[in-house]
Each structure stands twice: as C-alpha cells, then as structure tokens.
Amino acid sequence: MNDMNIVERNVTTDTFKITARKVQVYYGEKHAIKDVDVDILDKTVTAFIGPSGCGKSTFLRCINRMNDTIDVARVEGEIKLDGENIYDKRVDPVQLRAKVGMVFQKPNPFPKSIYDNVAYGPRIHGLARNRADLDEIVEKSLRGAALWNEVKDRLQEPGTGLSGGQQQRLCIARAVATAPEVLLMDEPCSALDPIATSQVEELIDQLRKEFSVVIVTHSMQQAARVSQKTAFFHLGNLVEYGDTDDIFTNPQDPRTESYISGRIG
Ligand SMILES: Nc1ncnc2c1ncn2[C@@H]1O[C@H](COP(=O)(O)OP(=O)(O)O)[C@@H](O)[C@H]1O
Ligand SMILES: [Mg+2]
Image 1 (cartoon, helix red, strand yellow):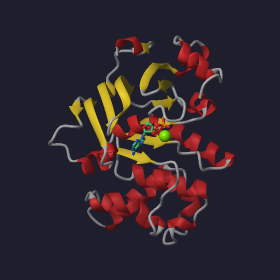
Image 2 (cartoon, helix red, strand yellow):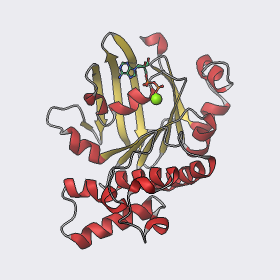
Image 3 (cartoon, helix red, strand yellow):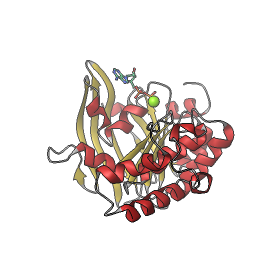
C-alpha cells in the first residue's frame, strides 16, 4: 500500500474539521478506496479531482455515511469530525447528515413548495420553536444560498418550478437550513449552464466563511477557481493533496502531472 503513499505538502497543524485515516471502501469484491488519509480544514473549500471512476464520490459519501445506504458498500478505517469518530455505533447517521449536509449533481428539490423544501430539515430536527422561528431560518437559509431576492414573493410555489440553477441554490439552502458544519457537494454544477455555474461558484466562495466545503469536480478550472486545497485521486488512491495553487502549478507526483496536463482522465 505504501508505494501509493500520498504526497502531502503545505498541510499545517491547524485544527482540522475532518480527519480520515486508512479509509477503505469495498463494493462487494471491488476495492474502490484504498488506504486514504486526509485532513480537511474548516472554513476552506477542498476540491476532490481525478479521472472518472477514481473514487471521488465514494470517498465524499464516506464523510456523511451515505455509503451506509448502498447495500454492497463496506467502509473501513476511521473518519473523525471534530475529533469524534462518525462511524461509532452511537452516532445516528440521520443526525450526522444534518451536521454534514450534501448537495448532489442533479438538483433534487422535493415536490413541495420553496418554503417547505427549506423548512423540511429544521422541522424534522426540531430546530424551530414556532412559525416565526421557522420563517427566520427559511429566510436566512435562502439568503445564505443567494436565492432570497429571486423567490421571496413566491415561497409557496413548487421548488421544481424554478430554473436549474435556482433549484441547485434551493438545494444548497435546504442543506444549510439544518445549520451544518460541513457541506459536501458532488459535481454541483455539472447540470447547470455557465451563468448558473458561476453563480453557484460565487456562492461556494461565500459558504466557506461559515462552513468546511468539500466539492467533487471533474473540472480542473472549477477546482482552481473555487478551492484552496485540492486532493487528487487516481484508481482509489489519494495521490496528492495540498494547496490548490501548488497542485496545479507544481505537482509532485507524475500521475497528478499527467492528469492536470490532460494526458490521463
Ligand atoms: N454503488 C456501487 N456499486 C458498485 N460499484 C460502485 C458503486 N458506486 C461506485 N462504484 C465503483 O467504484 C469506483 C469509484 O466510483 P466513484 O466513486 O463513483 O468515482 P468518481 O466519483 O471518481 O467518478 C468505480 O469503479 C465505480 O464503478
Ligand atoms: Mg462521481
């Protein structure tokens, strides 16, 4: 395993939001994530890049235990959030996912009103004492997702009636409504047009003031634009991790170099 060891640079000893050690994921016999160690900072955007099928989504799903929902998936190793092992038997995955929110590739609003999409999480987690509280959470979340001005007069209309970019921002609002600490985004712009993409990228830059953001992207340009840290995955290994600028201008591993220069992937 060690010949595949990660080249780690510029990783300071700041307190880490997430620490992963020796993480393995198997889908039946298939070993999809191999011995991954990584430390993820708070108030930072970390990008996961690498060729299709290298394990980016699989590893992202380890961070909020979404792989638990896949029958054949098995996760080993340790992932800590603020020093607590999220795979501990005492951890309730539903509670965990309120703390570690997720936004998917295709916007997936519930078939409910704009208001109810955002209010859903706070309601099931009992975060509002009364309607005024809930109204406040909904407004704050929609503002946080840079969507409030576009929807404030139509909160009772269906979320599915919004444009694709608005729907994705609605999903971001829904994720932030439960006051998470970490936001996981799996190629959140891949179904969006360039204008909606740049709005979501701007939003990601805002979100990092409050959250630890981890984004999977197949676009190296996007990784370079939005992230401060980048992790390069290849065939289930985390090959290289460091400051985004360094990864793109001075990669240490030949596999990273090939990928960013367009020779693989
Ligand atoms: N639900 C699943 N069942 C079986 N194999 C899977 C499943 N999801 C992903 N894989 C396999 O795991 C590997 C990593 O996939 P994935 O994490 O989706 O890669 P990426 O997001 O980098 O494209 C691939 O070989 C893929 O075929
Ligand atoms: Mg993926």
